[in-house]
Length: 415
Image (cartoon, rainbow, N blue to C red):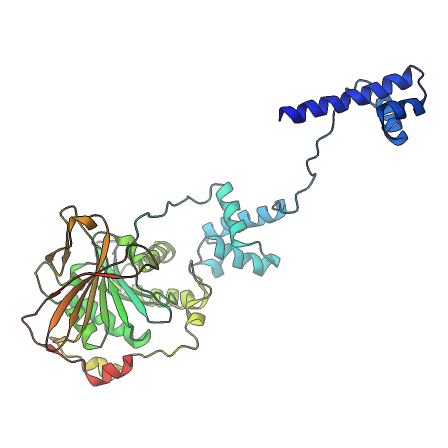
């Protein structure tokens, strides 16, 4: 910076010298020869001195007068106007719409033509304090992969109350690949209600390869050790593997948690219900709009379009009616992701499993393999994404109850 300043002062000094020599009667040819500049340069600064009598001949700024990549003020005003309209939800077509960059980009394309990129919209919203920055989680946790529809379905329960104290328990199941959703409203959140929801879900969404649950007692079976819950039994009976998320870490189940927040914000807070039986009708309208119009974060299209072209194996209603109650334990796999506690243990099926203090604070993947003749528990560890899985231990884990094979008609659906 100092060298540039000295260079600027030297240039200004040469300009002043040229004008001073000309005004003192020195011929232009002599000035050109002495300063080694062109005649046009000398006359330029003589003219400039006439137009600006008090100038010290500084060099002007070389900064560009316009920036090709600068966001147009008109584009910025349109983005902010769309954001305000989406927040108010005054238009019938935007009744259930979100307020993020993807929705703004879609509405911009409808109204004004080619829209700015998602990153540009995000920068505009950030500059005007419309969004809050989120800090990513640092610990690595293994997740199941969902490369096609119904590879993984995540289920959760959200509780709300109607004026007067009536409770509404809503079971939501999200397909991790397409973000398609099945939702059931119940009065309670017992294992029987969860089973009813899952059977209805598999009639419409189709049977998944892996069903993911949190550690709610309706799913896990309560506090008793070695107990296989009715929800796990119905999954195994239909040939579906089960995965339990880490304890007290709701963000691991983020696809369904994000939908729960979306549902609460865009559906529940915009309706006033006086009876529980009024909820399913309005919710059906909401889900129809969601499937056909909503593009979720990290998704490229709507749920309906993302599922096109893939085979969907739905549960026939007649087969659902034939599922026995109570259910046996069928062959299959029960998985769980757990964080190793300071003592070097994890809990699986309400039983402590020793991993070792070397893995304190790290996540392990446990798999209980159920076969008709024997059962064993395998503990896997992956230090980071794309790393090789390592088996930390494998132990026998025999159940007191007999394990039956999966009925052939359900095994064929997964073949």
